Amino acid sequence: MIRGNKKSIKAKSTFFLVITGLLWSTGGLLIKNVDSNPLAISGMRSIIASLVILVALGKPKFTWSFSQIASALAYTITVILFVSANKMTTAANAILLQSTAPIYVALLSAWILKERVRLLDWITIVTAFGGMALFFFENLDSRGMVGNIMAVASGVTFALFNVFMRLQKDGSPIESVLLGNILTAVVGIPFLIGSLPSLSGWVNLIILGVAQLGLSYVFYSEAIKHSTALEAVLILMIEPILSPLWVFLFMGEVPGKLPMIGGAIVIGAITIRFIVRGLSGKPIALKYAAARSLFRRHRL
Image 1 (spheres, one colour):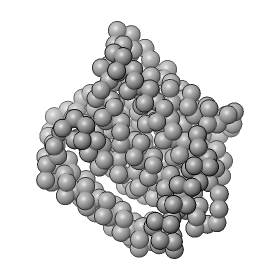
Image 2: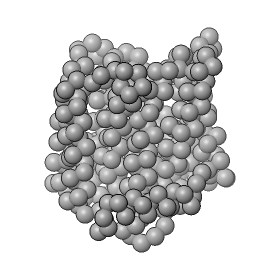
Image 3: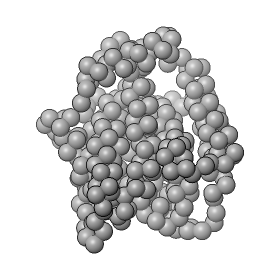
């Protein structure tokens, strides 16, 4: 639970979102090391994540409200669309096209959440997507049109997931993630038949379920209560930037010059946006020190 004054709450929620992005960014590397069907990986990962979330929750509080059910459905559809897109088109296409989510979040937030989207937010979005285009430009091609359409659709559903999670900021939105993982498991587990991973694959699956998905959504669900939907998506854009970095460090895949420049543009745009908006009057080091202290007290 995030507590404190308004400034410290904002700082801690931002820190939790950064941690979420870091955990999510390990997905590509871990999935590459699991020798199984992508849908089977999604199903097993969701089962493990569900157990982690149940431990964190203690006793789920299902309200069966519209926003809770809608979040769960949007979560499940996003996972299914994104996994399918990765099977039918390149991973770069899938990641880039899904990352159009902030555009839809901005539109949906203004319409559904009545959150004001400032000029600076739009400038950040345009700049960040310019960087994202450079980051994946070298890998883009025209193959797999159906996969590309699925990837775009996953960006829309991910935006809907963020917005419906935001609608639950005064409640307990993590139950939506739990429901979404259960539904994803139901859909994905049948694909495990005839596609059992090796021992090392199971190790990576456990890490995927516990840290990359389970703990990350515990942090995300708490942080989203104190952040706008657009802020959440913009911060989490570090995921597609860092994901290729882990693959480079541990598997030796070297990114080109354009992706490196694109990554710098995205990170720079997000950083400048938060400096200008003045999220906290504290120095950066003190802000994150306070957030780390909170994390230690609420260790999961």
